[in-house]
Length: 287
Ligand SMILES: [Zn+2]
Ligand SMILES: [Zn+2]
Image (cartoon, rainbow, N blue to C red; front, side, top):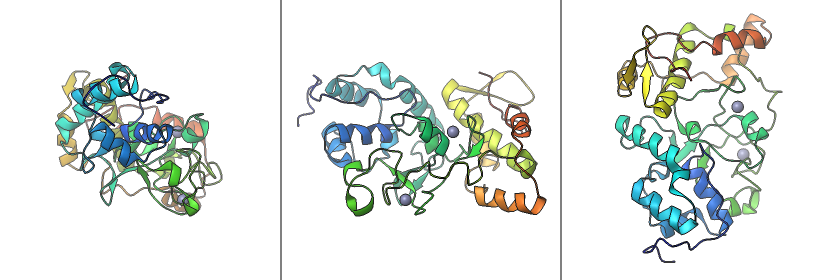
């Protein structure tokens, strides 16, 4: 395959979803062309060792768009957000999840279950994105059946049990189980009374990071003035983002629920999670 010209060479390439991560899209494109992600990245002329989600820069997007018969503006949001991320974290090692050098993702089982075509949005790659505002649940870290992390891009055609392939990105690439299995039986929405004020602050700040990357600015809790994105770095240095020290997961919440005898009340959760100006100076800009 020749990458020196930009005329369309591939047919049947799936269009990227608006918020889809490059790794997720590379995975789906590889399936459409019946090649491995490694072969696809090589064909696109991309370095294998670089973080796959940080590869989509201007010239690369022009080349890939041409080869796939897509428009460059279909990658616009991704390009803008990732450019902003590079200003905070050039290599992505602080803000993005990884596992043994591979790009790692968290996921919301309910979001995956609701999607027809399964894909992973870019915010699921971020350490600071700890809960899903659509379903008010914690993001999942690993497959509910075999506890393997979700690593992308993956070779769907040879993934799963016995390397027989899996049907979509909604399946674990190690054991083939649905990543959306047992959504409601294992906890569901967060009860705000089970969270400490510190945890609420961290979760709100984590969401503000992604809103900031999307909008290009942040606002503090005490002012409506737009602050430059780089202000996030200060909160990172002060340990106010839910990165390495933030350990909350569904099991911990379940233990607290048993100890306190609290039942899940979604109205209470709504009151908590709809508040955009919780805490310590960094809050999600208004939509
Ligand atoms: Zn969700
Ligand atoms: Zn699994």
